[in-house]
Image 1: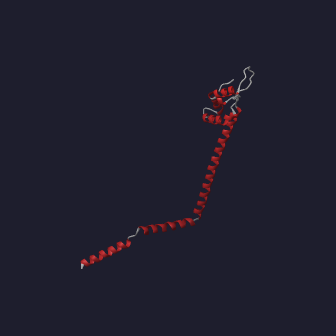
Image 2: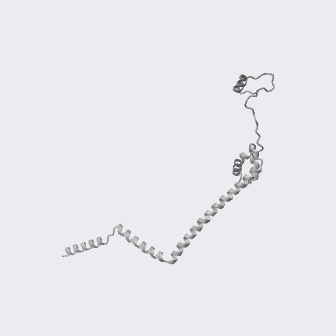
Image 3: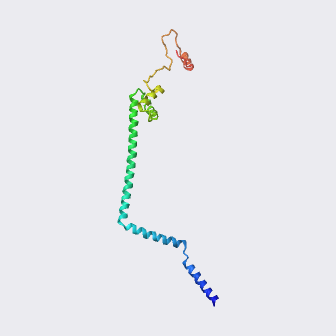
Length: 167
């Protein structure tokens, strides 16, 4: 009789154990249900709604502030570049090199060197970009009848062109 009682007790324990076993899906479902319930309670609360509205406006304000700061920084940089270009144009820099010289001078500007000093130093280092542009006209074709007694023939002209000599 004791043996049969032990068998019955063992069967009851096994049945209880199998009844209390939950699958992973069951646990996940019950957890999700609890989260939904908690979220629905928070979403109904007026203070929570006010907090969300405040958070949304503060984010948009911070984004606007960042955008305005970026625009301001870009405008300040553009103004400084234009001022530097004006200084270069007012110096005796050749017009065709003005933008290049301004960009080179901008690289030289730092805490110790201002724009005027950088322009002055650059003039000393690279004088070829400053001064008046001189255009020299060189005659590339041979001239016929330059006042010499010697008559230049077509053959002489062609030979001079081929040899690259001047009259």
